[in-house]
Image 1: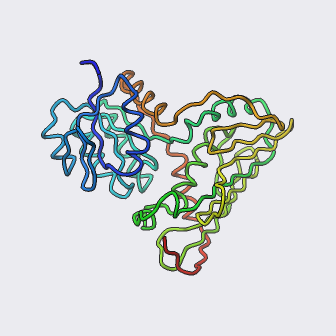
Image 2: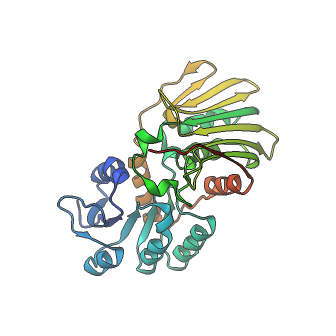
Length: 310
């Protein structure tokens, strides 16, 4: 690290931090992790505190923070960060509601700070290639399948089943973030069928129908009860043929031919962009995926099924 490295703190040390954030930060020469704040975890060799207030008071050199706690608790902590002059990165989803994140953006602007609402799936290796290749075609229909096993990917995470935890939309919003990045026109929700276990406050499955402003129909199926291989794909039918973004945006098949795509680590790309935003004095807060989730709940036709235990 150099003296010019951005001094970074992490709030909320859990699985996603250990699996993704820490490796990405360690590879970025423009960042130095100098503190963490978490009730449940710490990073070896890094000063640890129980709250962001303690971390800020004890670390005057702190310049930026990455907030990685569940979305229901992020707003208050983000306010503290921004009020203390810290550039702020928000793990996805950026908050529990649209309104609170919009207020955080206003707060960042007033304090001349960078706020970055990250959508890690948009940094998938093939996403921008797909966007560019499909931009000159006429889209006819889209099918999104985002299905995985919650017991495998989110074991014991009770918050995700609570109000504001999004349930199956926690992974589903990854598909929505890619879809809204590559779509040639805005989309809106036409129908929403949500499946709730009788013992959960968030859905375990969702069947959605969208329509773009240009009249392109989109069908989306999200399910957390997937057995076998995961399905993280977006299929597009166009006037010139078919395209398939698969493996969560890592691979791209165009008209039956799988393209060679240079590998890219999503979180390394996220932190590269965070550094760029800070250096440029800019923010990136696209709430389109979260708005579509909110609209899906607003229009949701709810079906209650048997209890689910993970």
